[in-house]
Structures are given as C-alpha cells and as structure tokens.
Amino acid sequence: MQKPLFVAFAIGALAACVSQPGPETEVGESVYTASVQKLVYDNRHGGLVGPAPAGPPCDGWRAVHETYTLTLADHQLAWEVCEGSGDPATYAPRVGARALGDAEWQGLEPTLAALVVDGGNGCIYDAETRALRVTADDIEVEFVDRDSAACDGQDRPRIVLQAMGDLGTAFDALSRK
Image (tube, rainbow, N blue to C red; front, side, top):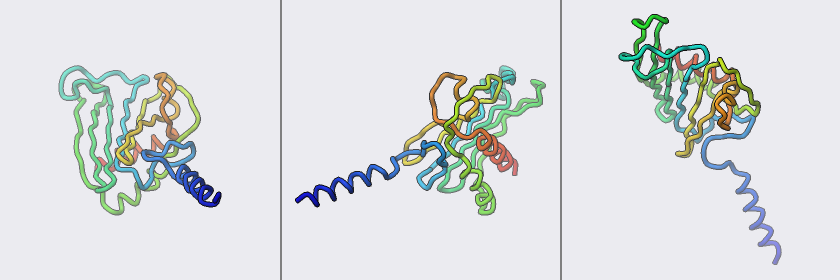
C-alpha cells in the first residue's frame, strides 16, 4: 500500500520542479522563454543627463527617453523616444510601430536569448537606468540592469548589463528602418 503513496509523492515533487508561471527569474537563465508575451524596454537614462526642456514636444519626458515594446505573438515593435542634440529647440518625439520581418526577427532572437538574469549587484550613480518589463503567462516582472539596480534601493531582479545595452541598441536600429 505504500507504492501509491510514494507515486503520488513523486508526482507532486516532479510538479514542483516544473517552472512556475511568469517570467524566468532564476540566476543564469534567460528571461526569453516560450511563455513570454511581451517585453518593454525602458531607458530612463539618468546619471549626468539633464531633463528635457519644459513644454512641448517632449513635455514631462527626460532627455533622450526611450521606451520600446515588443509583442512576441505578432513580432510587433513599438517605440516612443524623445531625442535631441542638447539644444532645447532640437528635442522632438519619435513615435511609431511596425511588424518585424522574418530576417529581422531571426537577427533579434540571439539578443533576446542573451537577456540572462544576473545575480550580481552594483550601483553606478551616474549610469543610465534601464528597466525591462517581461510579461509571461500574464504576469509582469520588472528587471533592471545590474549596475543601476542597487542605486534606487529597490530589490528587483537584474539582467546582465551588456545584454540590456545590446537590446536597446537593437531596438533603436530596428525602429529607424
């Protein structure tokens, strides 16, 4: 009679080893998994970059603000960027959206796979503050890059610093095509 109990216990233990719903947060694992629905990359900049000039066209945004949203089901990339050269008259929003082509998607996938959870912590006060909101199984988790993570005193999961920078660079390039 102990075999059915043992089998039930073994099945329960195996079920506990199956990944939990939501984004991957285990150190060393990529957050880009089959269950991911959406990625939102937000470069809040900071550090030595000052605020954008008050008033339109980028009212309320920080200088060189960037938000990119990638919906995985349809490979749709949307962006909202405030850009300028330092002269207040040059600041202007760049907003748009488009579906990525097959070749673009295949080129982006290694960058997405490199978004690995980092167990380190650090703080560089004059560094950009980049966040990545990952939605998987209808659960959203915000990750930050490793070196700006501890500066705000919040304990959030971290992404490898280089991978966050590479993602921002890739999204910027794709938004300009």
